[in-house]
View 1 (tube, one colour):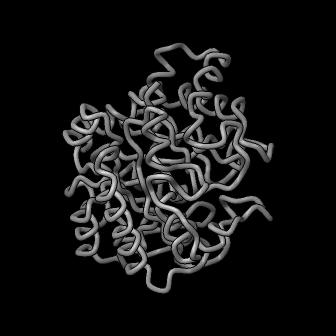
View 2 (cartoon, rainbow, N blue to C red; view 1 turned 180 degrees about the horizontal axis):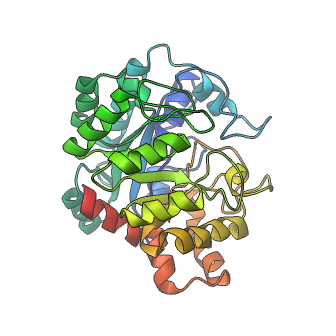
View 3 (cartoon, rainbow, N blue to C red; view 1 turned 90 degrees about the vertical axis):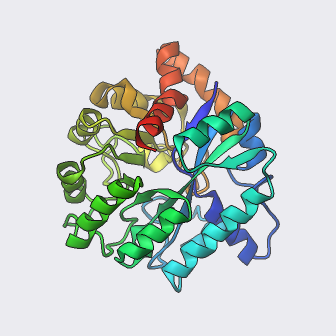
Length: 334
């Protein structure tokens, strides 16, 4: 079964390894969830690689359980001295690594290039940014990121920025955030509302003229976490032709400290019931989460298929969630 994944933090993990003097590269990894060889062996058609930047440098408490932070996440938790410099450093690492692995991976900027990579048997790699604050509220910097290959951007992470307010905090988009949304649609950069607060989510719904994404989120009706989406949000995403990627983090799925198939498939089913089958995809958050996983890493994603079968998913539903919905979404938006 092919796979498409809307979100991983592997580039930030790799940079953290380099800064800590530890071995690792994008081809064979750093001992985390994702590397290019594993993606190819597991049949991935496309992996979104997020450039994650931490504006304030506190621990990633919304995404990690207490006491589970490893050496890589400690480095990722450090505040970026200059967020713009940090995102450019991450982008340089991404492009340097892909230039060394053209035999198995291909950076893509459009759906046509995604199809080219698929025909060549290579993993398509799509660049995203997780933290709109790296642009300092300046549209020229947003356009520069687009020129560097960024095709999706989360408007906020866990802190307020020039664009808006994150989950659990009052406030929607700022005027600058509204201007960014308009410019992103003009450019062809997909707005990502994962991490955005509730008011901001609904403001994006009101203002957006094109489909957008929630790249790595779960269902609030099943587990009451502010990072999760309400049923009304899921229905709105379905009504607008958007895409939602289910997050693999145990803390968003339920009370278990282990990310379990039964919890993941329950969220997938609820997303389908609320948003419609064509709206639901995978958004693992690999290398950005630090909890035990029943399927360990991207190298064992094949275990998801029998788990979905046991949960009553049809072959058509499994194929749609694992790759077809995301592929079709990018056909319409890139």
